[in-house]
Image 1 (cartoon, rainbow, N blue to C red):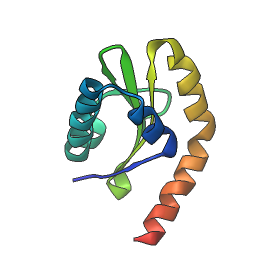
Image 2: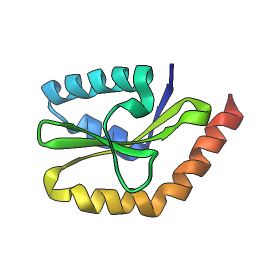
Image 3: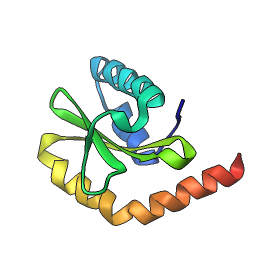
Image 4: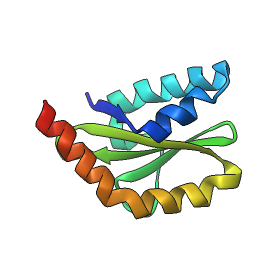
Length: 105
């Protein structure tokens, strides 16, 4: 079982979704907690993945050694590459956030 954390950006993206999309995201999150890296498609690095739903994508990082999923963003097809590039540029910061969360536990 994986622990799931989210960024503020992810939380903000989620709040803007309509109820049917929120329901779908909740279902994906439950699947992520159970299956981790088996869910979605790997992107530029093996632990950076996306899961497509309708015309949107949920982006997350999988830290297998700590059994953590870090949901970082949701975007539409139009902003897909911009979102991926931003996540890649921030990937070291996300790792630091996870280290901080682990030290809190």
